Length: 103
Image 1 (cartoon, rainbow, N blue to C red):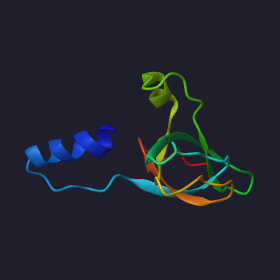
Image 2 (image 1 turned 120 degrees about the horizontal axis):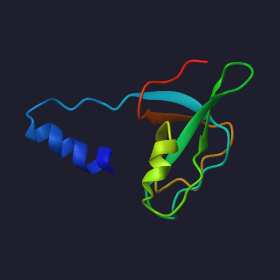
Image 3 (image 1 turned 60 degrees about the vertical axis):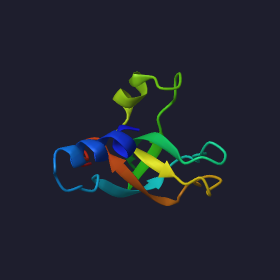
Image 4 (image 1 turned 90 degrees about the horizontal axis):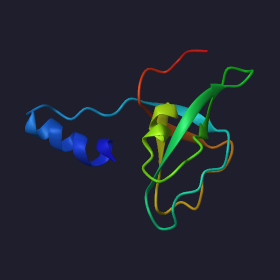
């Protein structure tokens, strides 16, 4: 939520230009479901398969808003309210929380 609501305001107050969040393309290793009818942000972890392909899987969620979920995540995926799910094998954009670890 910080990146969606707070960050743009802070950037504007600082009179800086908005920069896109760093992101990479990855392949969904597990099916991901959004909240029905709402844009959903799914915290994810990266892993490389044997061929070196970058895969993402959802971080197991605890209670809503649990900060421990963020500490376990490498980034997040945004799923539109119009999508029913992200299927296994789908290439998706992943917004990074830090640097991408190389294989």
